[in-house]
Length: 457
Image 1 (tube, rainbow, N blue to C red):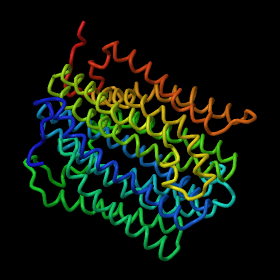
Image 2 (cartoon, rainbow, N blue to C red; image 1 turned 120 degrees about the vertical axis):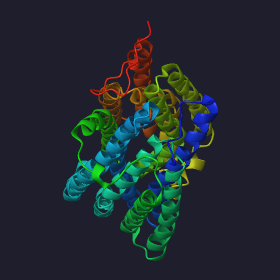
Image 3 (cartoon, one colour; image 1 turned 90 degrees about the horizontal axis):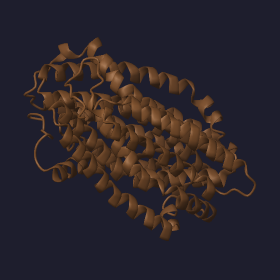
Image 4 (tube, rainbow, N blue to C red; image 1 turned 60 degrees about the vertical axis):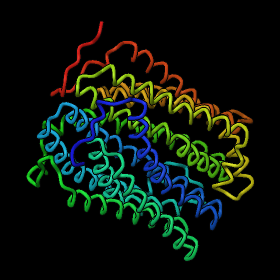
């Protein structure tokens, strides 16, 4: 960060790939947090332990989605200012992010800690898993400030064009999480609570490393403590960008929790099976998420620099790269689903039931290549409201009602329920294509625009 890394010049395909790879590796390692918990507990505990970690980690994934949404607003705004070469605005945005996110993290932690029992009950958690699910959620909720802190710093760096440094932080933290998981769960037999402790310890170390880096790194950007305050104009723009993304991610994750609650009524085996598949899907969608995240930053810088055509080419490149992974995983999940589901459970019934769910659900891995990339493109253009709207329509009018309806039919298996997500994503994809063709994305919608770009006729 000796200066921002410009994403507005050079070959698009190679630039996007180089910028996205650290995103992918960092996302992969971050996903290992919850997956390691599930894997280790699955090896040293019973189905109740697996179910508790699966349910608890889904709850924390919802919180992380909200955090990522809010911090993405900062990434996009900083990237647009970088493209427009407005250093003072960059410094004011960074200071506002630090102050605002610190306050939000404390409030959100208090809410989650107080509502742990209520959340567990709302999810129809199997009786055998209630105690450990509550403990897992409570302990992980105490680490919310660490989640906010790390993602805020990472968002700042990525907006400046540096996607490599966050990877280093998360790599070290992930190794610590894996080691502590095996010690607390495998050696001391602490189960789900031990896995949760390992997770927040790793998150704390990740935040500590990022803060040390920011203090020791020399900035050519002028920044000091006086900037760490609430700048109401910058905060307003941050929330206009970030809140729709946070609401979108949060409500979509909540919708999956609702589906989990519905499936939990089908018994402990079904509950554990869905938890296993959700972990697999998280990993398989990481390449698409990585390219989508890179698209958001590259689009923002190029829109800030007045290069909408280059921004659109970034989108097409990202979709192409994502499809390579999406199609590949779909094919493998059809040919050998049990080889994947067996990674997270040694219970034969869970493995077989999870394989059924995976075969239908995996269609989503192809469709999200289009939706995730277009969503990030729109966000980079400051149009974060549209992705939220179409996602909520698809989620609450398609995904949840279909899953609920199918679960009530006699003889329904997880295979049929697994089609609910791809159907919802298909609806989102159609709406995204229509919005893309309307060219409304070329109009900057911020109250204090970084740059205005006229719609091409």
